[in-house]
Length: 448
Image (cartoon, rainbow, N blue to C red; front, top):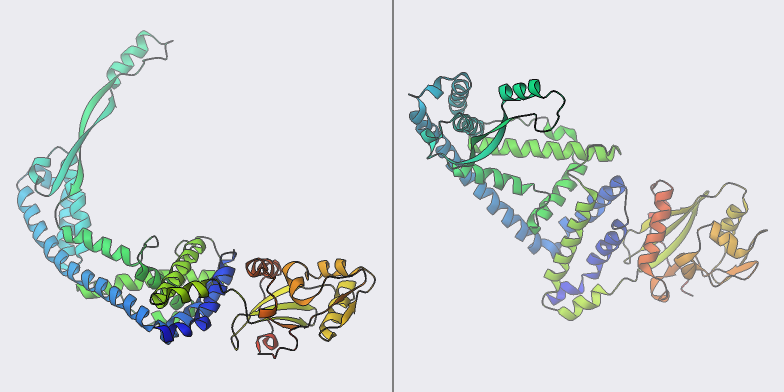
């Protein structure tokens, strides 16, 4: 375990970095693109996490086994309950009423079609109708019955009062208390209720179970990276419990896939399954669990790694008119890139940025026309970014430290604040994709 923990900086660094950025993210498209294209592939493919993934998958399979057993039990219980219910009411007047008679016919048809969930729903309707019509004693073994008082207007008495005192508005109506009976709880086919709860828990967005959280993130990853052709050869079959279970899961997956496609098209109306706030919490809980599991035999290493927020390298890059900033969290890993400035052509700000992009490390850059501090502010090279690439500016010039700076020599930089600042600037410009040349690895030219 200690040998594995030694390799963790290359794993938890990018994950922690993304979580810092994700906490400030407000655009669902950008958030889920990073989750599904970068974070989840890292979690799903990392060999160090195989025991944790196996643990989650084992719990999922155990849950699916429980669902399968409940389906078989529910099938038997619904069939037997219907036979007993019909035997209790077949000779009564309520069984011949139009609504109850239609429901009984539908229940029988659904039982023949082996659609036991629909049969169960209509059985509940029949029980409610029987109880509300005052025949609850016939089916006492199937339901718990409760009662409540309801006020019913006495129309004849109210009309008489109105005729006697037409100018009075108080106490004009006459009411009678009527006792109503209703179904408090269903007692037949308990396996069906447990089955519905078990299915819901598999996709429950509010679940606190870690394996369910992992399952949600895997579905998001699947939905982002899967094409519509996945559903081409899928069909819904309800003849058997296994077929019904697969069909219900297929419908849920299609619902998730459809919503993710809306996010990819930046159509956020009606989005509820992939809630931004909910998935931020999911990622945070999963990262905490991963860290604790891998460091559980070495608490000191865990504490040391938890405090480590220093990236490997920072970079400035001018792409035509766009000024980019990149953070490479770990050596030889893909950097996080942010568009921080896009000045107008021929402006003093653009000229200043061009001078910086051509300057050698350790040289002085003269500000055209305006003061150096003013142009740095206009170029979004102030705040935490200034601490990395520049010394304190004088009136007309500033010392440039270089376009590639190692993180270890920038101990005065507030990294969380830095990430917040550049993320906001990037979002302000519409979160564009970085140029391919910025994503390529570059040697560090200066560490001064």
